[in-house]
Image (tube, rainbow, N blue to C red; front, side, top):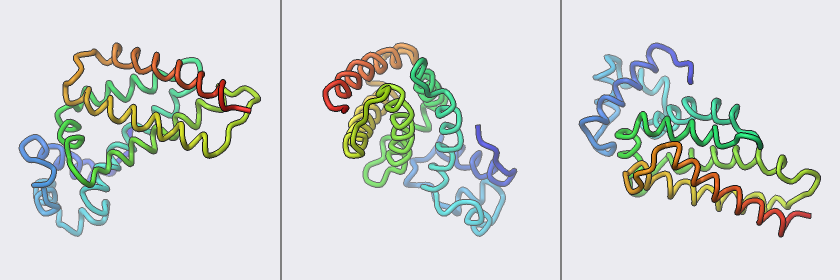
Length: 186
């Protein structure tokens, strides 16, 4: 989990509290600042805008733990951590993932997926190589699959528990990645 200053914690608490009663697009910096009992300038001393706030929360709360849990033997533990985190914060992320247009979470999910794939591919290759283009292709493929499936799961389309969701994701990933690398690695 992240280490935040007290002001940042107040801003995050304020923002998440506002998200319970408002849509993301309705929330202004002024509303966040007033609820956190700071000035707008105080907000901007810590975050660029509310999109930066969302990204910071997501990155700091997830990235360090997921990266530490991602390895060839039990990479699914990183994915389980992600979906448990999303489950614990489902209402908040359901609103954010429902946004049309600019959605900073897509960028954050991509970075997270790219980091996980970047850790897994070298471990799976064992002496073989793939091009940078193939690595980017795999990152893009798994990002779109993971983002799409996770978004639908958070929104309630699938009734799977977090463990069942990750079990299904692991089966898809293991089979497709090994098959792809067997065909395209040198």
